[in-house]
Length: 73
Image 1 (cartoon, rainbow, N blue to C red):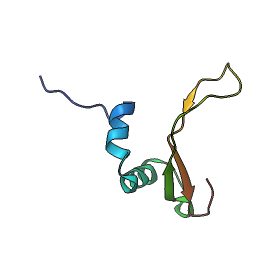
Image 2 (cartoon, one colour; image 1 turned 135 degrees about the vertical axis):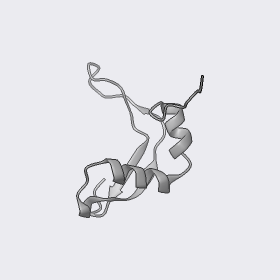
Image 3 (tube, rainbow, N blue to C red; image 1 turned 90 degrees about the vertical axis):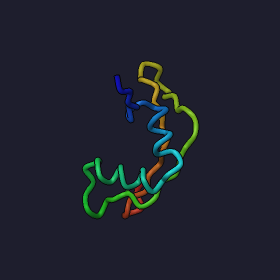
């Protein structure tokens, strides 16, 4: 039986895109419904888990901060 890596798993995704910001930028521009003038031009990897102030909300993990062509983050 063949074994495959699941790219949606956190560890695999980070291994593929963690050290290659140009690949991640291209991937996000391809899959996100961004307008032509809103494509991602740069991104920064963030570290750590950000826990919301309201305990009822789910915890979220933010790994990337993106900036588009209009300078919006």
